[in-house]
Length: 135
Image: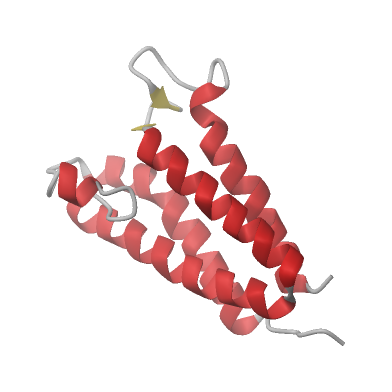
């Protein structure tokens, strides 16, 4: 299994965990905020699950499929996180359409968008620069 396929498999695990956050007792507070920072709704759960199964499929199919997943997923998630940082809402969960531009504290925006920026950035950089295909 190539490095990119292993990374895609790691994304399957991480994204499945993200989809499960609302359903693990103790990780959400009384207001339904995960880690007391952000609320995950059915759109977020669906996004994370679809992304997780896309990652799994890519990891199992081929090195090329894993590379495509990492580059496309990375670009989409990184842009979503950057948009959330700039305007308070992202587009992948339809937040910009349902909530519009939000006037949120910048520190909160950093906490809320760091997961997408980090996951997206690492995936994109991995797909672009760690391409050591099958030997």
